[in-house]
Image (cartoon, helix red, strand yellow):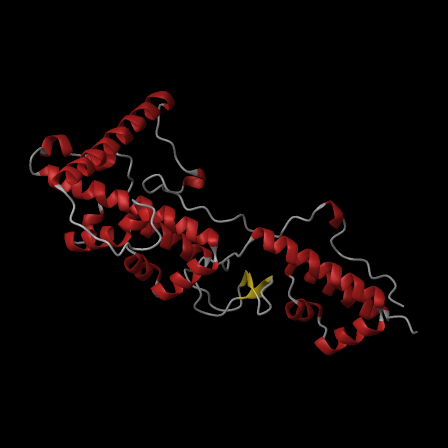
Length: 299
């Protein structure tokens, strides 16, 4: 059997290196400058190349499945088309793929979560980044990581709406005591009532109360009116949380001498800074020493 030419060996090394990184045969073939038919012909003709192909593909799938899906990396809220993202392919395996135009990027995801943490309103947060709520719900169903971060943002947004309503209610009876309370609670953003009406706040809290407060996944079919005692207890609990947060911030400032800031100078909205997964190439394991597979001799 005739050995592979030096030029083809170089292209195959490039293909295997990309396949090990992306788990995407088509994308790796484009980067290496090889056609799919040529690669299939090499795979059938050279068993050593076929073995290294399978090993590289298996390693990439295992590492990408462990890392989980990642949104396209760009500074714009939505993709322009062609950005790299980690998502499942048609075969159900994780792989690096080119994102189509109009998809939510990592910057857009962070902006969405920050707005959601301030308003507890999915539709309003979607308008901020210019994406439809249906896209957000599909992403929530596909990614457990995004679903967890979205739940955390909803919980904080629900608490901020409670604080805003309590502040508005008490301002009429004790305006001196409530002056500057929003800043004292450690919230570096205006009250949600500056961008939302009372009706919108009440509706947003009602839509997510079952999930945030009671931890229920589905709405119970049995409903009843809230008693006066339950209402008083809920108001007292909100006031207690506001007092505890104020005391904790005062204690922190006393111990450190200055308020804490997020890494990189990012503004922390109500104590929640959405965290994106660490981006970059997946670190190779001990068995991956020498990421570029050697294809010295396929003959």
